[in-house]
Image 1 (cartoon, rainbow, N blue to C red):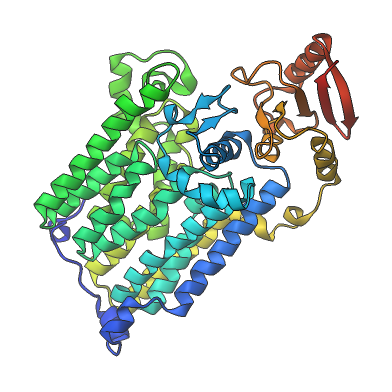
Image 2: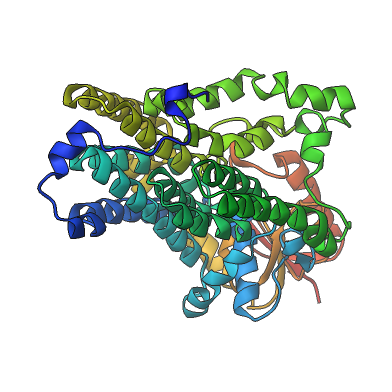
Length: 491
């Protein structure tokens, strides 16, 4: 992520020759309007994201961690109290887990539509909206064709696809904020860059470090007072969240995720100082999963993103992920790369503007980006939209809902991982087999036919033993059909 002297962060972006030729006939007013085709692109992406997320939920492929947790959080806000999650533990105060008060914004929609599906629709809308500032910036500086291709490649990028395919996460709010902030920063609209960056402090505790890096860019580009103030707000926001707010709410009285840095891979024991130093040096590029993630991040930009100083904004997220002892943070799965995608594509646009390529060269870059995006796409969840099995209806789903309908509203229930999000809207639901779940629930519902590769937290054997134990401790079988077992307390 090094820039040459000519690419200094103080260099104001210039229109490329192609962009000048393409936009020469436009009036100043036309630059501020969003063309219909950019709206159409964002709308098509929104429909794709929403369709995939809702279909996965309908097929009972969503999870207690995290859709179940986040619905309980937003349900709490909608009911007018601080957020708790029964999935995390009995009456667990979620503001002691992660700092994401921005989720309260979803509460009014949830009151109108009390369903986990509202979370998935909101996430789809937030991510699709992030296309607008990036495409508009590309249109102003590189022309309409470049804007269309870059917007499409961004919208179909693997980091976004991975996030859309795994439930809901609060970092969806960060994506449009980052896109707007970086587009403003790349256009030397420094106040706007700070305005869009500061709300990231309400999205998640670690994003204050990202705000701090944006603040340093603002200071270097000329507004030192604003930049230093933004950077200070970012650092103070993260420190306040991690050292004061989260420990105050957490039942253990500390930040819950310090162990990611202080334990070995997969929590394999405490790390010493030498291990910690290794993690934040050589350990940032080993094992190879971390290098693979970096290559996947940069490949859709033909590695041109490395030529933009804006890529440094990705550094805080990359450091905490690669220094973590949890291997799922290192790779390209789940939602962990979602916040990186607007940064990488903003760096791509900035690099193209700085290079001022000829029409032929620009077309080559764009064709290359589109080709790599198309090559990677089938490996990630958006491709499921064109797979026939996505649209087949499993008759077991109707059976599951029929049995779940027997559980009264407001009851305490433990259920299998992928049944929990089907119940969190109307019951006090927690995860069956999870050590921190509320003990002695009124109901237990288990899908005994879940394939081994999707089983969590119990294996087949562990689940059978625990069900037998429940029957021995006073539960009775209320229903059993097609592999679903519904237990209730005898009496």
